[in-house]
Image 1 (tube, rainbow, N blue to C red):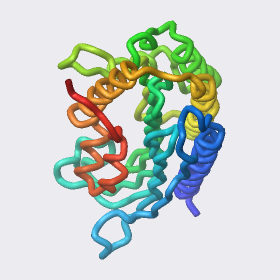
Image 2: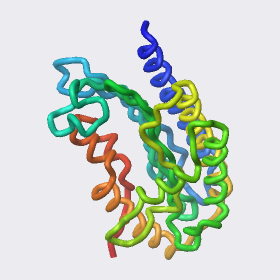
Image 3: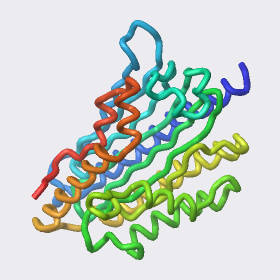
Length: 290
């Protein structure tokens, strides 16, 4: 097996391991949620394998894991490992495809929409892409839905950023300040002149020392798997008002606007034969536009 194939296998295996860890942590929180507050029995992830393409050729696929529970109104934690050739539309736009359109990509992508408006929504994804070049990318960002929590000095935001900063600081390839600023620029709604949330980190085309780049990408996943359940556990027994639920649903509408209007990952996935159900599972289950 070539060094590049070994790298592919290691990256893909890690994304699947991380999926299992995060799903287990969320299911544990579902079990621990107070029935007096949430009522319904705890939910569990439904895992569905999927294949890319028409089925006439092997182009990879992945596993979609979707939870519709009492604590987490909707949580999707999906993995993929796909390959093929980029269409004419994308050739030349992706590094390493100007002469050869072949690609391979693996990753994990998740979005969590809690039922309780006092618990922030969250997004995380990391990926490894191979063309004539190869690189890592990804990040994680927090989206509190109540105005009172959408401050840089809010406790949940501080905890989330501390975790992402620690992951960056442990690796020479990573720059927390640059990745934080990149996240703030990317997750922004120009038509509303507002950020999607309170940020985190975002990075792409990380192609320095492979071992350190991979170790950093793993550290981002591990940091997320530790800090977000801790944030949820600290808020899950708080009750909420009808006004806070209304505010949450309206804020979710802004989330939908970002994903459909500005998110490059959504557009890229839909235009390259990705799994529509997993791509659009990022959409919240209930929203309002006043």
